[in-house]
Length: 374
Image (cartoon, rainbow, N blue to C red):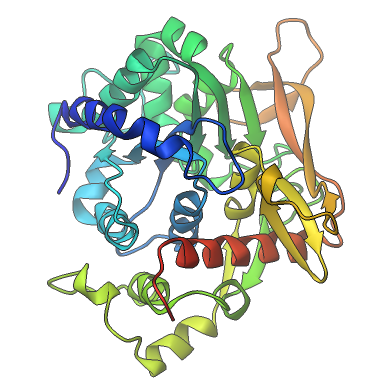
């Protein structure tokens, strides 16, 4: 059930009680879990089911301690609730990751706090601020939709975000400023606010060189479902079948445990998916990318075998950038322009293969970690 205003605070208290149990369960990783705030434009029925792949892969990375999921575009969430796939994933993984819906409307200006919007849509911003305020250490923020709730949180308490956010990973924008990318268009003022803010920004453009183009400074690639879901368990297949076919059952949780219907399974496996995020997430957890025989994996250092070949499918480089009133990106060496970290693909030829294989293995990891069987 959706947490009401203040529910995240209660969840944080519960999380603290089990923190020491979490620290040593990460295979090959003895470090403390990484606190994460995850902001997503996840819906059911979906706008784009890449968000469901993203959600599953975020859950697959055991190093992440997901403090909250903020569901973008609060008013739309009322009509197409992203809470459904979150509750399904919580059910399948026996977790209780909390969530809140975000602000309903676009920010009126880059410095808009969003406080004038209805109370029922304030929980997302308030959760962000509460988590950061109560955290004893830095928090990683990951956004795959608009930047509305993060921008509103920054405008309310800029020093809190400057002091408590370790990195903001943002999947948004066009590397060459060739057009207004979809996530930018969701809230241009929010994009301008964060891109021009003195924050540790790790910018992952969705495209580079135009729509559906990646010339090397974007994360976009395409993959076949039959490859992505090759090693997925039956419950995980049910999760994707429910999403892709936009099902509407009285009990969405029970639907996860039924045997997959072959005709529905074949329909889903025959599809192809545009992806941006899944295989980038392990980098944020400090994992290494390796080639093992003919497959690619993203592993904690303790799980890397002597025969694995460590690779770097992408890196981040520092650029100076400004964003104008229309949300268009301009590179500018002027002293006043913020320096940010921008995503860069090291080898475009093998990039789709690597990212697809990493995603496939993350979904396999999720299935095996929860002993779902096949």
